[in-house]
Length: 308
Image 1 (tube, rainbow, N blue to C red):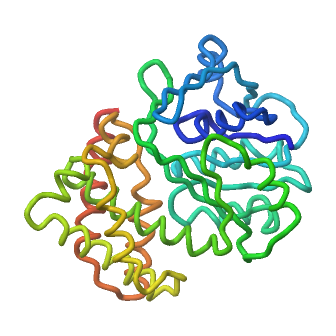
Image 2: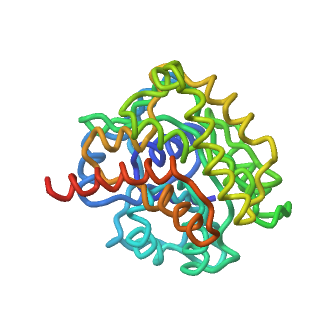
């Protein structure tokens, strides 16, 4: 199976790298500047799960290549439209697109751009960042991709993809209800990124501060209420489950959005918190903490705009 990974950032380079490590046929679609860097240094992954260095197969949007069998769509949401345009020449009749973005708003956009039948469901759990040398740095042990057909069917293509993913030094998990898993991840990352960016802190000090756990739970409850009102297929006890997950996180764990803010980069506030704010307004659901979180992100974006 010929695999194309969109981008070679923290997510794409890591999971694509683990597939290369196993021996799969993986190509990375990157910008020209990143291509030049990787041609000089190779992909370097420094991970608690084992380091990897390899010389990747690289293409840019200007290059020609026959359609790929599987595409790992691992860009940030604010690059979504540009990424869709870049990918179109590499998508054929039988291409399967596995998105690893946070949130849910990208799914209908991908279906519209490439065809509903080409898009499956997916998400990932990983804490990675690129250092100044362009190396992927992973400091916590979680490195999990969850995937599956959106209609919950056990198709021949999903079986082939599962075969390709098996035996990899990362966790690739087939879900029989990927839509629910995506909403649950959406809820979790909205809360985690919300509190860590609002308070400019890793999760540990927030969690252990007086009233910290109650604040996190309240934010989760607001988000879950919006999702339930909308009709998202989330479990009744999902708040308890996610609070248990919060307890397992390392003291110094930061959300990817917080890391982006610390770098002065663009963030996914509109795609994550903003999408839910719009749903709350549409369905007349009160969400005062989420509104504070979102306002904080909009202020950051305004300051960022002024500094550019």
